[in-house]
Length: 68
Image (tube, rainbow, N blue to C red; front, top):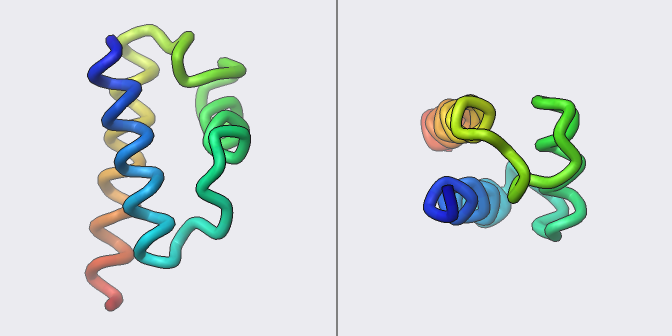
């Protein structure tokens, strides 16, 4: 599970680096995760919800990279 949380953070920071996310903070990430899953903090996600967030972020990265 810790690996999934690290992956979520890494994807979030990559989106910030690409200019798609304005605020790279943990609070902003937690708000995004809550909007997607209803869970207040990414460290509390179960495997299914963490996978859902990861896949969403990966698709977002691909959309952004495709437009650069």
